[in-house]
Image (cartoon, rainbow, N blue to C red; front, side, top):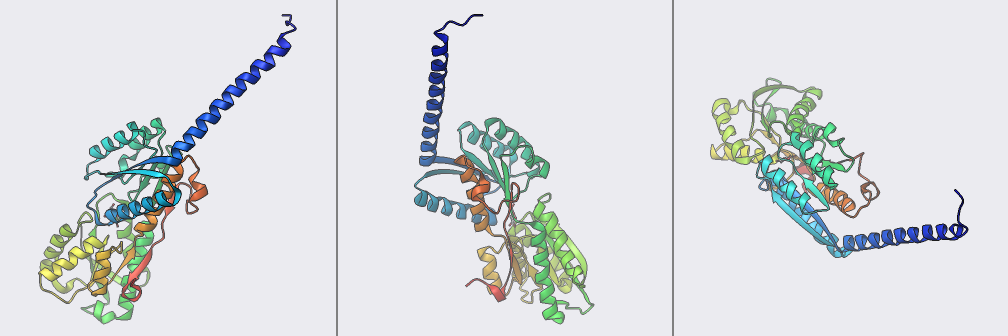
Length: 348
Ligand code: BGC
């Protein structure tokens, strides 16, 4: 086809106009988007149970961080924190609401960590990133979408540190710990919720650490108290009746259950306590270490975890790559370091 001579002029002009419209459009959109992001972001958070002692410390720390960042960065950060009340159905509805209301990012402490795929698939279709924390989805679920992250503490490390507290107590005073002098530590284990990675792995590695140090052990009993102080206290009261002073060590997957065990001893009016170890280093547990009723704990750093959750969520909500502002990221995981806490290094 023969070209009209004017085409040589009109075509480039038309192209330039289109390009200009496009780029202007883009520029306008970008600046209005970034302006609104500067002014306001919305973070939705759902907790497996708001009354869980450790989870409530993450919540408090998270809220404090939000306040600071709002002030320092001059951003309005709307945070909506909901209680999943131990019910995955309730939590799924909460997630649906966050997604339909256009939250910028959601942070999920799952009721049932094996149900992550449902949440991830919904979030992916809405293109709203997710930061899971404390209750770890299986790796295949995390691989379902690149805008899914996890923040937690290494359960194996926690178990090993707890075992070290027992080893140190034994080595510094073998007769006081091995009360019957049979060269073995008779123990009971209070376990967290079945199926929670922290329950399974802490249980395994705490005992392994003791036997790896060459100290023999004998398990007298184990039972799940679902992370809860009152359940642990009831179980422990039964064990005190059945096993009495045969119990030399009480491993507890968390501090609340360790405090429940201590409650049972005080209810039974027994003041000669075995070695009792927990995990979390919550404020009431630190008090118990100070009183010398709790032998030791492992810091499950709720402040560090809240910071990591916030920093990832903030980056995602403002459209930047979390890798740039969260150097602790290992792939899409942050493992917050832990630390042994005993009377010797109690924070003042
Ligand atoms: C903590 C427990 C808590 C549980 C909730 C664990 O990491 O140690 O105290 O109850 O998480 O998921």
